[in-house]
Image (cartoon, rainbow, N blue to C red):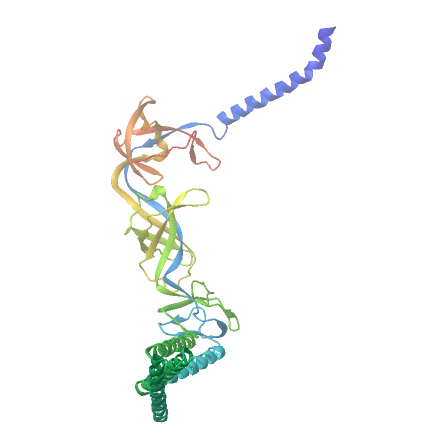
Length: 428
């Protein structure tokens, strides 16, 4: 009775297990016997030319591209060119409002004129009237000094004989010293008036003149910089500001804002990045054949001009090295920033033995081919491979022309051969 109850309770679990096993068996058989069934495919060792190419993708850039910025700030008064216009060195591109700059120039000119007048006055000395007045003052002070000297001599004599007090002697000595100081001062001022200012005063006047001249030159340069001119021959690639916008100058380490971008479109670069795997493969000077998105009827030739020696990891942590390529053929009106896809021929092997890449497998460091020996039997042969174009690989040794090789494949949904198992990478 208990066995019957246990059997009744367990039958649903047994049914479920049977369904799972049946589904698994069906899936395995469908994989083995269906459209994707494994098949032996035969390949023949043949001679062909193999060209190894590498593909890089970059963007078009102008070789000589300049961000046009202003050296003075203000309101943008006028933009004299449009995007796409050709420009030459020295050509006017834009103008900044000059009202405030003109005021600053007038103030600097007035300050310079005043400093120049003061310097000339100090250098030339006093007028004839000033000299005559100072000469009379020197004579008067000399008379006063001599009278004070005689009085001091007389008081000194009386003091020595005991007829004069200490106070009288001190008063006489003080009067003489004051008279002498007045004489010396008037004589020095007369000398300055005759020969010019003192060295100290003249140096101060000269420093003021130099400073005012510098400020005047700065004001003149600022006014000139209000007219913005092209520094290169080229084309206007973009206009970033419109009349009425505020211009922030690029001075004293401040970046400033870009008014427009001008570039030399006669020399076009393709800038891209390459991984470490291509550093030892690509070299400067190699020829490149470009597909450009806006040119459909032809390939555009170019060459590698620079490969950076310094790499940086990208957002995925892969170290990438900047590389520049230059177009060597005129493409007319370029579309800067557009995508350029370049093909670079790295190696070429002419009339060499070859097999499809998928016919070669790896076993450690060895490359293995299953050679057909007769009666459907196969023999594993160690082969030496050379360059590969991704579809075919060069066979340097181990097989001869006409040898047949077998490979294990399945057919994918499109009906094309597909290798079962792990992906094989053939290295030369």
